[in-house]
Image (tube, rainbow, N blue to C red):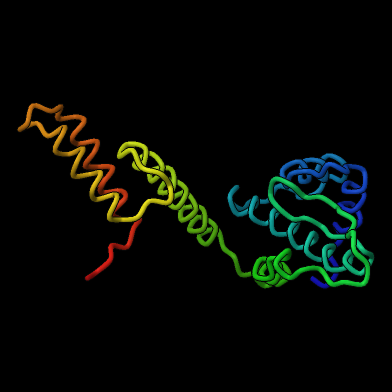
Length: 195
C-alpha cells in the first residue's frame, strides 16, 4: 500500500494528544470516530494482527514524512507521540529509528502473506520468551542472585544452598527441590564456559 488512508486521522489524534497515546488507545479512538476495522470471519488473533499491522504501517509512513517537517514520531506500543526536533540542519541519529521494524511494517506483503497459523506461532513464541524471562527472575531470587550474575556464581550459590537444604542433611525436601528447579531454569539461560 503506497499511501495508508489512516494517516490523516492518526495525525489529527496525535496533534490533539501532546502527551502521546498507546497503540491500544489509538486503535480504540480510530474505531470510535471512524468505524474502522470491520469484524471479519477470520480468527480473532489474525484480525488483531491485521489491525496492528495497518496502524504500524500508517505510523511508519507518517514518521518518514514528518521528519522532513522537523518532527519525530515516537513509535512504541505504549507511547506514540509527536515530538519537535530541537536541532536544525542535522539529521536524526540513526539509533532513534528501528529500521528493521520500520522496513517490516512498510512492506505490505508482510500483511498479505501472514496467516492465522503464523500469528498463532508468533504469539506462542512471544509467550514462551515472556515466561522464560519471568521464570529466570524468580530463579535468580530463589538462589539469592542479581540479574548480571556470571554462570560460575550461579553454580556456587546453587551448591551452597543445595548443601544447606538437602534432605539427607536435615534440610527441607520442598525447599531443596525449589532450589534445584531454579538452578535448572538458569542453566537453560546461561551458556556455561567450556574450558
